[in-house]
Amino acid sequence: MLETNSEYQALSYSISTAPCCAGQPFAFGHSMSFNLKSSAVFIALVGSAFLCHVAYAEDNDSPAGLKATPYRPTVSNPADLPVPRHLEWEAGGLFTDDREHIRRNSIPFLLKYALNEDFGILVGGDSFVSDHANGSTDTGWGDTNLVAKYHYAISNSTALGVEAGAKLPTAASDLGSGHTDFTLNGIVSTQVNDFDIDVNASYTRLGRSDEGASRGVFGWAVAAARDIARQWTLSGELSGTHQGGVPSATQFLGALSYTAQPNVVLDGGGLAGLNRGAPRYGLFAGLTVLIR
Image 1 (cartoon, rainbow, N blue to C red):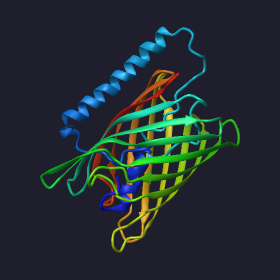
Image 2: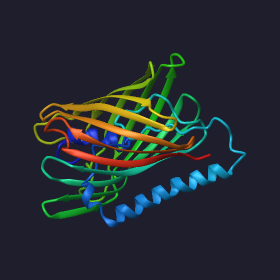
Image 3: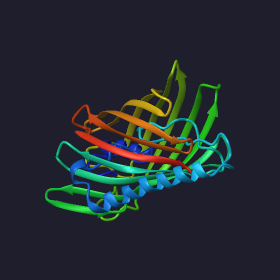
C-alpha cells in the first residue's frame, strides 16, 4: 500500500488491516470504476455472509455468547481480541480517488486468532489491488501484514493493547512498497456513557523512504461508536499521519454497521480527506465473520 507518499501509505496500511485496515480506508480506488473481478469477489463475500447467517440460524447447538469482534472499517483497532481459539475473518471492498486522480480498488482481508484472552495473531493484506493512473492500470496481489497483539484489561470498561507487526513486500509489480516496514501500535479502549472509544498511536519504521523524507511515520486515530438501534451501530473517526519531509495526512471516516447475527457483522461507509496529504474521498463495504 506504500507507493510514492510514504505518509499516505502508512495510513493506507492501517485501514486495510483494520485494518485495514488495519484492514483499512486510506486505500480504495474509484467507486464508479470497480472492475468485474473486484465485483465478483465482493459478491462472493456477501454470499459468504449470507451462508454464515443461514448456517447460524439452522444451528441450534451453537455455543452461546460467541460474538464477532470487528476491527474494520476504522483505521483504529480496539484493544479487544476475538473469541479465543476461534478464527475470525474480515474482508471488504475499498475504493479511493486521491488528489492526483490516482484511483485505487482493493479487497483487503484480515484473519485473527486469539490464543487466549490476552494474546493473538493477525494476518492481513490486500487479496486484490487495482491502481489506475495516467491511462494505465496495474492489478495483482498486495503486501501482507503479520501482527502480534497483546491485550490487558484494566477494568470491565477499559483495556490497553499493543500491536507489533511487519509489512512484507509480497505485492505484484508496483502495487506495494517493495520493502519491509515495521510498526508498533498502542491502543486505549474505553466506554464513555453510551460510546465505545478507541484511541491508537503508532510508529512505523519504513524500510525505505523517498528522497528528503524521513523513514519514521507517526500515526494516530480516535474513533467513537454507538448503538443506534438493536442491530445497528454508527461510527465516526478522525485519523492521520505525520512524516518528516512530506505533507501530513488527516481524514474523517463515517460508517454504519449491521449485526446480522452475533457472529456476522456487515459494514459500509465513506471517508473524506481533510488536507492535501490525504485522499479526496473513498467508499467501502465489508463484513466480519467469527467462524464457530
